Length: 124
Image (cartoon, rainbow, N blue to C red; front, side, top):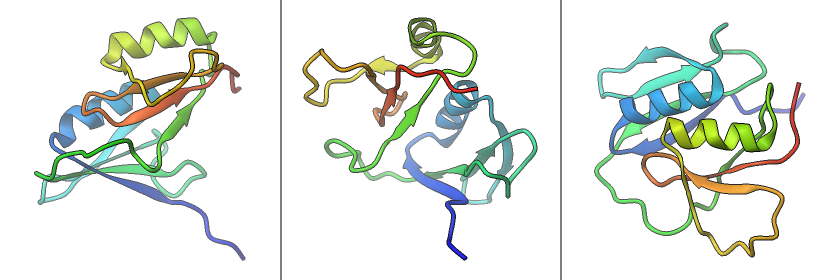
């Protein structure tokens, strides 16, 4: 049997702000809050399913440079242009990580500057 990713941990300055942003982006819900201020979000049906949960953990450490790992997201109910508009309205902003402008994806940053990509293809 192989492993699967069950949760991803993201250090951040404002766990509530990132939890709210990523809940909006992914259609997730807050699943729990820890005494240290960490907030876990995931699919509405809860943890343990196919999709990993996200755990936003408070830190005072600054983000330095481009992330070595990032999320790729795909729209599920609209085209890429409409999804880009929705993400920007939710608080994402364009990010430059050295792309040429010829890419079929958009590089964005969440409210704390964590890069992620909006891919062209739509998922059902």
